[in-house]
Length: 447
Image (cartoon, rainbow, N blue to C red; front, top):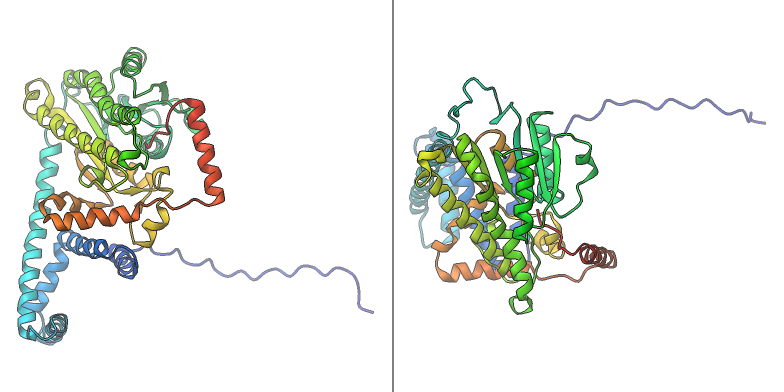
């Protein structure tokens, strides 16, 4: 009979851990997105426009790529040049169904590459000039600050940063990024919100919370006075908070429109007027505006939100101009301004459309990536206009295109934002959020 004694366990063979997966290159990410767009079955006109946008963005962002191709086609080794010209010519001839010869196709490709290369070089030069123009004056030593050590653009003497809507979403990620990037004790972060401060922030001495309903001017003035008296004058203001909901124009109502514009637009004016005078006096400061790619495009279902973000862009542009002109003599040139235009971000706003967005190859950013870009400008003492994803800057040119093209783009986005009936779990979550909002008397802040 076989022994019933338990056998000692056999030691599992240990194989070396797999090497870490390499970070996908920009080319790999671009190729993946192109494949998703081309394979998408919905919104065909929009997919064609997005494909053109991606190709232009990639070409203009990397003049080195177009430059290398141009060099190979015109001055490369004979064998490589011949093979490349043959393939380009054949491709153009096939695309034009024989209307253009291979040689004509090569000449056309050379001309296009030459234009793209020149535009790419101009864009790079323009970016350099923008960085100098936006940050050159403001990063000079400020009055009374000679010899003061700078930590990534935030003075080590303990800067005060106000973040509206800092309890959730992008705002909470901004607070986390500031805590990680500035270092313990280097900044005091004042969170202004109607929601409850997360426990992780309550444990940090650098985080101070003030309740404030941004739809109420009186509440904003009260919070600002308390901040100045109890914490000090902020040197950085990050206007992040905002509200939104998907609603067709005729289903909207005056009360919600009023609240949305008070939170998304009018509160920004009040906060700037409250904190800018002290920044001018100190000749040091940074004002950040959270806008959106919706500042440039208005699809159906988000008309009020898009209008508010267009207004936020106008505020940023006007403020930046007045600082350089009307307030230049009293420290205006030392104040930085940054505006962020996120595209689709993984927040509660897009929950009902997420499957449509994925199926049509839309890039959906994370709140953390948006926050990292904003905080990078703050800690690096840089002003400017940011987009997430970076290639979304192409939407700024939409209004310069023919109206039929603009209409096709907006109509395509409208198809992507049709609300899909939620699952049972989704309905439960929706009801829970609505109950919380009703109990607290406010909508969940987008930021």
